Image 1: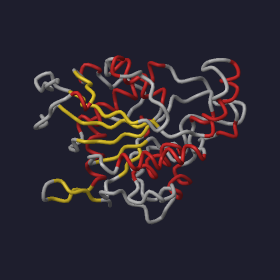
Image 2: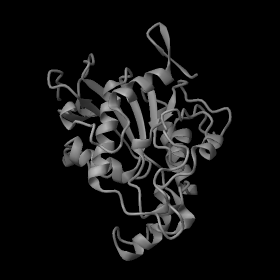
Image 3: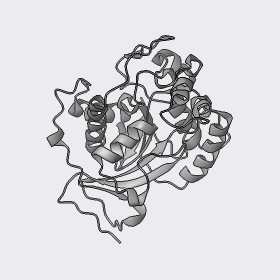
Length: 286
């Protein structure tokens, strides 16, 4: 078991995340998720707040998009949404795409930034590129590889894989994952106890990766994620995920003000915000 210190007591991280997950009810069909249970009244850039003491309804969340992957390189010459762009992403060579050399360099810069960051927990999508980004971006050693057996964060902070953070599935092989058995061998420092199935529940074989996930289904995943972090005891959380899922979250669920930046994050970009889940716990603006 991986432990995390909370106050003067060591609490098993498996129990913490399992309790919060139980509250969220991990049925991705959506019929048991009441959107009315979730009240996100504010999503404010961390630099625009004056926080002296956090209330129970506030969480600081550092959202980080994965660094550049080989699939990003393949699609880069084409305009987003065009036939060439979609054809590049449909290439089965990019199944569960890994980081490109540029992506690995981006992780080194990310590592420089996270060394000065406060966080109590790292949540990460179980796709390879996000696991690589989280591992290299939060490693205590900036020269650590993504599969270093001696990996530790600069604060020995637990890193937990969480399926609802994955990218929008379907159509693109890059957005499906390998079996957890295979992934865990490469990332033994990550806690995979919340992943329900060893194999990816969304089938992807060469030539057929299924229909693109609907926004309605993405919305269910996002509500589950937000309820999950609301119920976690940790107050400052780093989250490593993907472009489409984060974009939908900021646009439809967090009511992000585009004057503070576009919905879509760049590769390896970090956006630190204060999420307010309770209208009785306001954040003071500058």
